[in-house]
Length: 411
Ligand code: NIG
Ligand code: FE
Image (tube, rainbow, N blue to C red; front, side):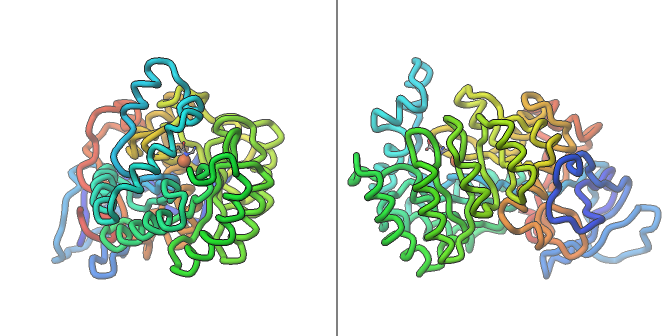
């Protein structure tokens, strides 16, 4: 299949980079007035070039009609598998309760756990598939999905089996993360360390035995898990080859950055509170700093200091954090708009953070995810004929996605 009349093809990768660090993020590689060829059988990009150099071709052709083509979004942090919603807590928040207060009253994550426990695997699959279908239509081509609303071995496995079924069912690429340490399960109330020991002794081996998760996550934050417990869990998970992606510094400076970097985490995520020292630590590491502006927006928290982190030389990624409590949206178009308007990122920089660096934070940029390159997965968005790339996050409610191609097929 040939796509012609592309005004701007963005997200090229001339150096074969697997991530962009610091000021490397400022450059978005592009080609103007060009075509793109897709190998629909293999689901990969077969080539691209200027319209002026297009010879007669008999293959099926789709005109981009002067729109742009950008890589599909790589959303490296979601909790998209959950049951029902938490709109009741939304009302509590409107009436003045904080995220922490709701959690302390037994709401929050444990509320979602109760609902998930009472939902069959099939129903959970169907509810979650609706969300995944929605975000694919909104341009997400590669998505990380966490467990963490089970908090018993059986329910964590239930969530991760649903993630595996989703991965089979959709053209998007799914990467699953075991987040048994999202909160302390109800049966272990007041016995946090015992819960952590059970997680290491029972949950981790069970998850590993079924090969259900590549990554491991811990909510290392005030009121949740300590850096010592995080260290224990990550050490244990390493024995099963599970790489860390850590929730850190959402509610307080938690020590999560340090323990994540120590264990060679793919990413440390949130970072709404962060010290200068932690920024330099990230800048001198290969761990991505993943920022989640949707959570800042919804909870009224400070935005993570993306510009400062980039200036210091960190690898910054942006993700949605799609979850029922702190970010009930997986719309990466909104993430882009917030990154520009609130975090003051240039639209090109933000797009790099949501594509190649998001893929890096899921350990799949080396397979071409997040870039437009020959041989890379044919995952891209054709835009409406927008006047500029900046128009997209600027006109932040104007529909601009014309078509989404995943694994070489329009969805
Ligand atoms: O990333 N911070 C921890 N986990 C989620 C929220 C989960 C929930 O409230 O259900 C987050 O914000
Ligand atoms: Fe999260």
